[in-house]
Image 1: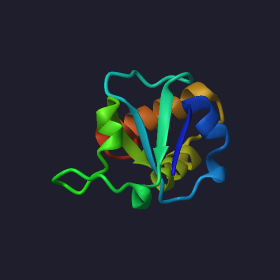
Image 2: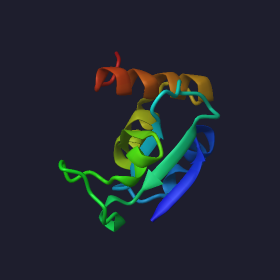
Image 3: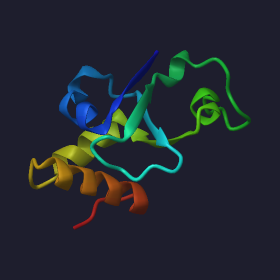
Length: 101
């Protein structure tokens, strides 16, 4: 199963997706509200690379951002509900692989 959306819409509708789905973003994308997002159910992907990762996202120039579960944790950790603050927190988590204090 694959879904396409934007980061803004994903944040607003995050509870509609299964916790184990993976979130992909374009290789060269700066995260913003309008960043295009690909959501993939890894279990449904049959074509795999040598690391057992799905091939489709890479074929279209996307890289793994994080899972829906991780994204929910990041969004819930954000002290404000402002979209720009949530996106900054997501970006900080992605760049540092950890929450920022």
